[in-house]
Image 1: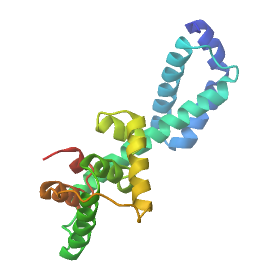
Image 2: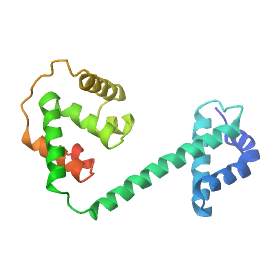
Image 3: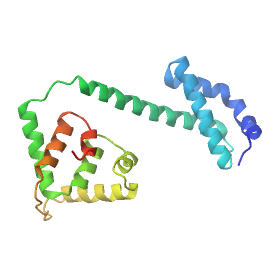
Length: 188
């Protein structure tokens, strides 16, 4: 646990390098300053609760990089959500192909498996994001994805034929066609 004066003693020699690195990442004076402040706050909280690293500069750089990556992902999702509103409607042929693939999955896998598989493989969600969105643990998500992938790979395995719920198939198909992962997370 580091005190605030000790934290300042460790960080101040690296502030200018951190600011330059933040500017290198963001290419904007204002965004660089925000990123630098967020990095300092996150590292202060970390050092307050744990022993500080001996190599403070690489730690600060890593925190800044990770924060910037997280911010870029958030911005990308926002852009996709906004672009989603202006997308033209899909053609009937595309819908038929997607719908038949979804029906095939629905005959073989439970709803939860399909939701997680689509979020991970089609929409690119991380394990953490899926666990949070579906109110379960990361290990549960890993387990479901592993079993689903394993069953998809092993085509000779006997897969149980399930009763297809038309509303689920429609929900999954629309989520894919409209490129809206939120459609997977709502049951209606």
